Image 1 (cartoon, rainbow, N blue to C red):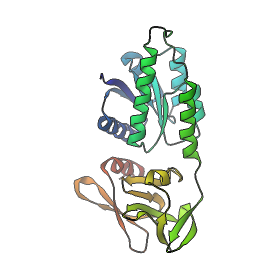
Image 2: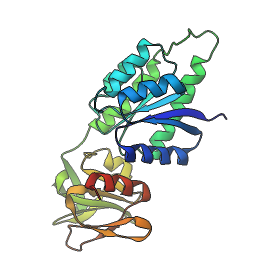
Image 3: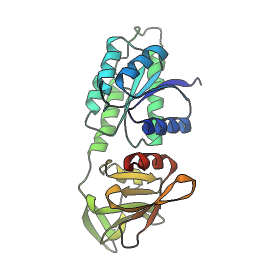
Image 4: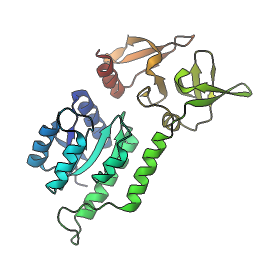
Length: 266
């Protein structure tokens, strides 16, 4: 299988580094260029002619959508995958015929799904009966994308936590952290410690605000507003000491350490 050639566009170097690392983990992608703004992006795309462009939405100067529309106007053969912290632009992404729309922090499984979609789109475009430059939207694929985004948007303000034999409703903002444990998902607030009926941390995370709840480790989801202290750990990683009654320490994965450093200017 030939590697797809990709250009990464984001105004934050750490975001580009993190995405490059994730693509290396997924495999099958050769990052041939990067750009920090829309103008640089258009120049890099025109020069390098990548198969895929990973494009941030919010950038100084030209936005990601302005870049995408200029690519369409020049009939660029490069395919677009948006990578952004905001889900309100999803339908606009479909209008410019994006292959996929990923929300930060990027989940490796979703990234792999996006690459599979890109390969299928590229294979379709290379069929002899395709018009040069044509990238028509497949209705079934569009419906799947809308479903994925709508799942992200169906967030809850209150969640049920099982404490003993009772189910108690808590405000989402009161959650300090959630962790995978032998008995399922443990959810901790300032006053309660119980279990969630969600089947996975991914499912729970999809119901919470991604700007507040970060998956800092495959086994831990934290409310960044409930971090009491950041403790340096080995290999330049961190432990998060949370604001619960036990001052629980939660490890941060290497990928999320980069994001945390950028967010807190460490």
